[in-house]
Amino acid sequence: MKRLFIIRHAKSSWKNSSLNDFDRPLNGRGKKNAPLMGRRLRKRHVIPDIFISSPALRAKTTAEIIAQKVKYSKEIIYDDNIYASAEIIIDKIIKKVDDKHKTVFLLGHNPDLNMFVEDYVDFDENIVTCGVVEIEFDCKSWKDISRKKAKFISFDYPKKEQE
Image (cartoon, rainbow, N blue to C red):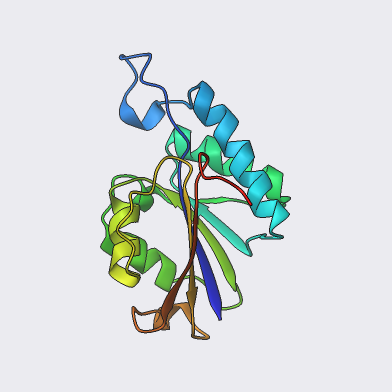
């Protein structure tokens, strides 16, 4: 079994219009939601074997906060291809993950994340900022992931009521 957590970056700031999109930081809500979602993942005892993120500032900051909250101590891999990519690129990145890794966090941007998730499971909700979609694949190798082997497990986001 392989588990994939698709995570959208936390809410970013549009305050400084002179910044390009890549350099936008988190806003106040994003700075609250990223640790919240990290704590929720930790409460579920979810720690990735590998954490792959877009290098855009808002994504990088979100990844660092979540990594710290789940006690992920390895290096976060920043992949330029995740920023402003297409779902096909995300698919290629996931399929190249070393099979020794059972649990993967991939943190990026919409609409690409939504399209990737829709390709694998019947999920038609918007992945809101700092939303986390969990998919389980019934296979031993990441290169073998497919829609047939995919199972939607959960969708969590900052405003979701917790049991």
